[in-house]
Length: 269
Length: 269
Image 1 (cartoon, rainbow over the protein chains, first blue to last red):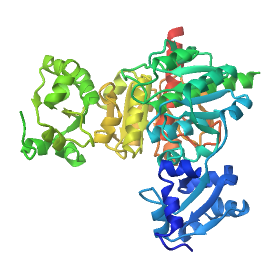
Image 2: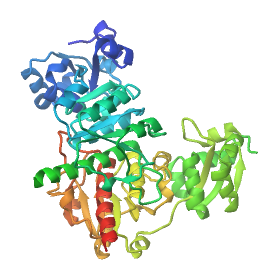
Image 3: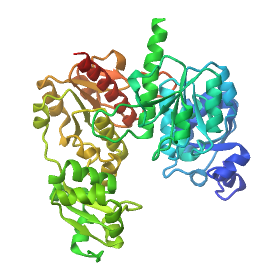
Image 4: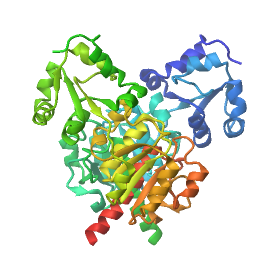
């Protein structure tokens, strides 16, 4: 059992809370039972180490420890103090994993013939980014694309707010927005900017086509040159007096509208 | 100009951050330009006092101060220190209003013949509650109903996350869940529990009928006796591997699905 909160190993895990360290090592931390369970289940080849307290090892024996042992993962029992020292959470839940960043490329995603994508171009709030990834997963999107100007999707708060979805679908980060929009066009995928300035209302958009929702910044939306590069600028209708939906809500409404049309078309075909 | 951060008035405003004080006085604080602007615009008869720094008075002259003076409201210039002492925000934005709680009753809402409602039965997270109110406004819902067991919708974090929507549609709080479900039935409004245990998928639900979305707790959903009282238990389809959507996302997806059906039916009729 690891009991020294000041050890090099503990410090190395804690250091993954800092973006430069994540970038240098290509690893990140996943905290809490939901995230660790989904990582072990859907991306075991990327899990480097699992750290767990004695209490959590009992509580999560069936859904985390068992699958982790079956996958041949390294599981380390740690004291409560060690887990707290590794953790970013206010109330650590007894289990944490160190995971390799995904190395899926945009080209690999495009080669699979995706029908529904979302591109975050300038999303800065960790909760928003995580919630969009969770919403994209729920809506059955094929991947989430994230520009270099957005929040780091491997930051603890983003990872936590994806509720495990980070391991359910490809999330390709660090992209150049313009190059990505060009690559989407080259792959025959329509680029729909989701923006309050749009003249096409969501129910009128051609959602049966393969397409990618392009989302801007929480406060200032999408810049004109990005709007100009997209095939359509689509607006979620605001029926009441609200100025707008927040970014994560707008993305989820758009993605569910797309899923509804694409899946009923598939069912009918 | 008010310059004493320790004055009785400043302490009285600050005290509105506490629920017992809000309940005793029937008032609450609204912080920041967006909330104050919407309060002045849509509920001026409920605004008791507006507090503004000299800098903010200049910045928001056209969209807050002008309309506030036109409505005959009491506007007080305050020092930056006084505003900070009144405020709950990490970075106060120079303007704050004290507003009377709305006194709209459930009976009054039902008397208007509402087509689309949402009932929060046990929502505990301020951000979730605020986001649902914002989403309900955007979707054009007729009102938001909130049970006594839910978070106080007049708490600073809820008010802030409604982004002004608190003043755009009736929000009736402090309700008894069972009595409300009975009253809805009596008014001919169908009660649709939004819950992962549902056997009716969202696209299959009869959304053209007048109905109320019934939302449960973030973690444990709706209890069986509430599910039993509802006319249908409806599930947002999860197409990917996510366990669920978060509460605010699920509510917004449901409300937008309802708005889409009801408004296209109205357009066709």
